[in-house]
Length: 493
Image (cartoon, rainbow, N blue to C red; front, side, top):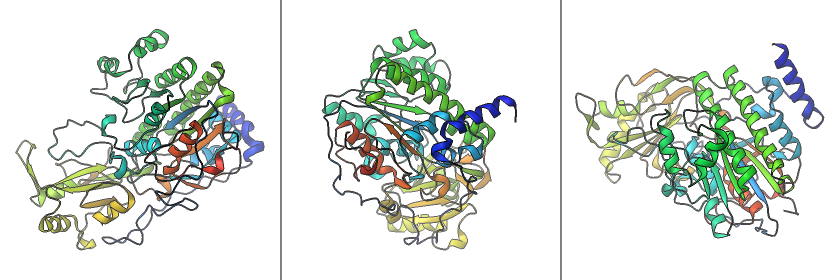
């Protein structure tokens, strides 16, 4: 370890040692929740988290709009909670994250969405609803003909539930967003939406057309290159600094993406992943300093979250190939889909199987046999379980799917129609597995105005984060399924 890194680690450790004390060693690789395919009602994930009220219960904390408060909601894609609860053991210098932990509260684990992927999770983070209620079921929409050319669920009009920006708009408050997923066309006052086409500089023209009027010009004048997909979290930090310091919205959403990309490419816990998180911590520090520069420190709550964790991966499973081999997808010699009776939505550690005719019982049976649902000995290597429709409905994911597949440890799903059913993965890390799997746990750190400091929160449902932000801002989310986290809210909020 070089001298500079040693000094950085000593600085980070000294900033929080008196509060957090010594950390244990990082946990060993998590053992996935066991499944008994194909009927897994007793072991399916998503059971209510300890201390969480049931979905749909009345909020226990009424909004109190008397305080004119700002909230900055920062998402660090793929940040596992053990990265901040065991930072020293990982050799991580993340002084800004740990300073927020010292000032406020943090969760030891956040139990996320079904599946644990970015777009469903980020929509839950701003609605308090599960995917089958808010409508964003995966990163990409179902595309059985493969004609969408890799498009994602970029567009806010696809969200079916009440959002934080919608609730604030009704209350006469303002919002800003930096690259938050599913916000193209959202009613956000200052919006840098996430979207891309080719991940080259030509995409800047698309972004300029979609960024809120006048905002791209103000950004370019101050910083230059836009926060596009092919650039880094430094540019997204620029945009966050601009919004927090100069626009001073009631709510600012900020999304940092680079940690997710580093863990996909190099694996969770890799040097590249740790270096990336340290850089993001620096960007978070810029955001906090921008709050100070605006004179808003005394009335701002900073909420840091993530959407999912990460697990090592080596292999892919292609369920669409199984369907094609069973005659359920017909393709041309060139690989184009001529017709289909069943299709796949691949989401990392899970995949959903949809039927063209959901009411066709014979088709459902045929698809089940192709997947091995009738006999687990016939399941393809790499498939942990084949779950019936009732499982996805119960867990709040993949609305209308005939089956949900769960990948075995070290495997992820790919939606491709060609190639072997099982093959090597181009990734070293993946997510999308059941949210109860320890490697999939997401993160929460809260500090600042309206937050009561105290002990760690233990396990928290992701459903409770948006209602907590809403309570801090004095608004109500119409479709939130749980109340806010009353234990983190101060009486003076």
